[in-house]
Amino acid sequence: MPSDITTSENFASPSSSADRAEEDRLRLFNLSLDLLCVAGLDGYFKHVNPSWTRVLGWSEQELLSRPVEDFMHPEDRERTLRARRGLAEDIPVRGLENRYLCKDGSYRWLSWHCTVEPGATTVFGVARDVTERRQSDYEHLVLSKLESTGMLAAGIAHDFNNLLTGIQLNLDMVRLTGPVSERQSRHLEQALSSIGAARALTGDLIAFAQGGSSSAREIVSLRDLLRQAFEMALRGTNIRGECRIAPDLWPGEVNAGEIVQVIRNLVRNAREAMPGGGALLLEAANVELVEGESLEHAPGDYVRISLTDDGPGIPGEVLPRVFDPYFSTKERGRQKGMGLGLTICHAVLQKHGGMIAIVPGPEGRGTIVRCYLPAASRVAAPVGEECRPAPATTGKILVMDDEPAVLEIMEQTLSQLGCEVALAGDADGALALHERAKAACAPFDLVLLDLTMKGGRGGVEVLEALRQTDPGVKAVLMTGYDTGKSGVDYTARGFVAVLSKPFSLEGLRGLLAGQLATGDEAV
Figure 1: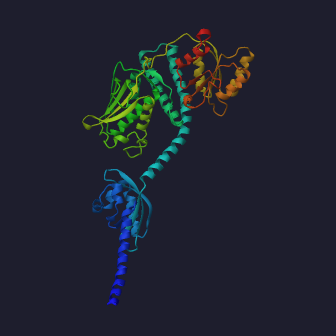
Figure 2: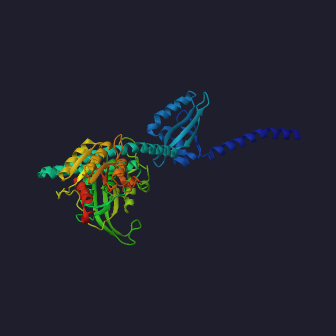
Figure 3: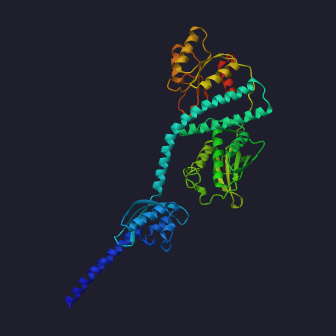
């Protein structure tokens, strides 16, 4: 009998050991943070661990009851099925990445390792959720491209501003040199308006290159600025735009280029929400917020700008994330954004002391974007005011620039204003002209120096050389860059003023009046 018992125990021990091993394997299978599965070459899951439900949201029964390819992203399906066919030929899968559908309609990126026993039809697979890693890689790629593209953007913007300076001054000269008809005046206004938009675009390029935006602000008529920006942003689109702006809209102390950028981004979003066309309404009104009325705004006077589209609207679960960097409900691709448009809008308005909010449209249709800007306390000068001839300011001026077109129009404009002009296309020419004028006891009253010169010394270096022989020289720096974000104090370098390109005839006249005035008239 003891012998029989011993035999029975010896017989049962291997079975218990196998059962425990199977239980351990099952426990490990269920505890794994990776997505483990057993599938067949027939295209169905046979067994999945709980991580599938945790990551994708589907229950085990839902995953087992549908073909695997139902969960694959359509763009990834063909190459994934090709890899499955390779498994049937004993070719293992290593590092295949594809997107799988979540129950909430979103997709997660999975990285796969799969194998199949030779001659068998059962596939053993391990998938790891790499969505965050792929998003991080993408953002690092975007930032790298932004950095390299920014260097190019700064150069393009500088050269473009030189061209705009010539166009601006030539258009101003048309008015100054003779009367124009009403029709001609209208065309001039449209051209000058386009220059303003182009200037705002180059400002965006420069701000982009410098990793920020200009903080320079001035009091402007928001009524005119918003209307012009809205009309410009709608050009070339299939959107029907309508403006309802209060006739007594308060002015604002803003960076006009940044506000134009906000309107442009919001119109672009509306256009992408309505690819087949639709209606977009811009409204602007004065609002007064009192203490306790709003948790988001400080009490005071605001201009509220609302844009309402009749697109499909933004799902409620998405609204909290719309201002996150790189967040987008659209697949990135041709004519699609990077998910930065609303982020930029939020940053610009916040910097101005305002804010932006998005709410569903009436009856759940469309979207309303509301922007708030603090109202300015002073009355704004009208936008687009015509150049009016004023008494010419006389003086002897030296201009250094490496753009022949800029030199030519500067000579014509300054001569028209009553100045005597000398031109230099490089540093050596400017220094030689200055020395000759000084030797003849007829020095220049003012020197206008371009900041950067192709292949040679720029304005800073030239002024240093001039001051060695003439410490009292009065020099103005001309530049197509944004000096406000350069971190350089050009007045400390000896310049009496900075003239940002493109500048108008009135801007140039104001500079001369300030720098050539004497006595009590000096600015």
